[in-house]
Image 1 (cartoon, chains in turn red, blue):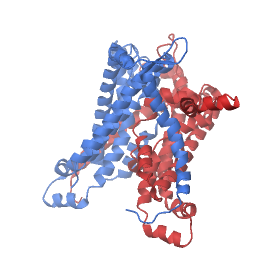
Image 2 (cartoon, one colour):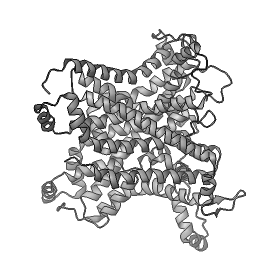
Image 3 (cartoon, helix red, strand yellow):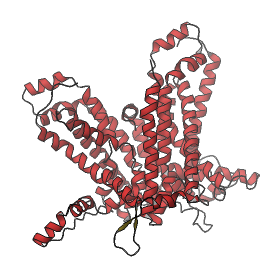
Length: 308
Length: 293
């Protein structure tokens, strides 16, 4: 707005600067600690200027937490979540927007309801399912008497078992089972003019060809938005990997980070290696923060359109 | 409504099946399992589950520790929501003036969204550590001034600050988007009528973003109830003396450390009901009562 407000402008800048400082100072303190030796970190009064040990500590944390393996795993997890989400959501939205069948709305609601309950609140039974992903079908067969029937007629005991603990599939699948992306795609698909569908049909394109050659190229920006968010979500997973991964070969970065500092209730007076832990914190933070900063435009757009 | 459809329903079935299968296995089945466990009790020597009705809930609701956990969760949810949203709202209102350096400020306020909960937890645990870093100086000057390792109130304060820090960016993004969707003609008209910047904020912008405010209250409360595990687990492990034993963390502790599946399932059901109630409240009342035009 065109008006001269010199005093208010100073106030505005002060408020914004204070806000920035509140968000940045904690990370500054992490960087300071990550660049000092342990005695310097523990010094009283605290030394508030960075030291010269940053590279040394980053290397130590990288080796100590085996971040080489963990980063690969985390990358697989995040990529799996991104790809799984993009593909499944696009397919589902396509199936409920462009086809004329009675189950459209029931399917939409079935998918939509999954938005309500995050993984954290159904964590215990989800873990049980991950221990045997076929247990739902086993139970259904048992209850309906089909397993008894099979057992009686062929002598084969029905025992379906597919253990997902300590596997990439187990890490990724439950995180993909939400409606986040389906909703975003659906809203976008609904804006596509009918004429486009008619034209494609007239030219002899079947549904799959229409999806591949018209819808997918049109939804590239949507996909970029969704991918950014899902990458951040996937990278930052903590509770689920903590539960189902016991084999260090499949460990992810966020969980390993928490192990750099032993639990305060069980440490017998030992000083944790804060300088390494803070270096590790920086390492784990960096990839998603970089993605959000680089992809800012798509990220903001995706966040606002997906409701999370 | 859309007129041009594809007629081949086999293709439709094919494309929705993968999603429905995954949802069934990892969402609907576990949710129904939680119900089953909540109303049954596992026999100590095997032999399946015994139906016990509301016994698990009755036990839970008569347990002081559970009510303490609920109380702590409510305090945590209300405080983080108020802190994060208050800060985000003030920052968004002033950032929306788009003075010099606006783009820099915006990115500076957005990036914390991407930081993982355990990283935030660890960073704040270090910063608030009574014997290292900044807080140690305060303790040196005033002995026993600050000790989240021993003092429950201090620990809860620390967890709330970390939680609020995590939430600020999310609210900020939505507030800024809300403010920018206000038609420019409205603010221009009031400027012509002589309303200065602060007056416009108070009389035009704030009333017009009330829908965003209500939406964010619900989302932030839900998030604080469900998404607090990473912070609690890395900062305090629920301690000291259960002072920060939030509901999500208690479910994890009882279910996976205590192996009390029925108790954990009953707690999950209560938390689910709470989350569903919040969502329902939003759909039913908030979206209807607050209007833009």
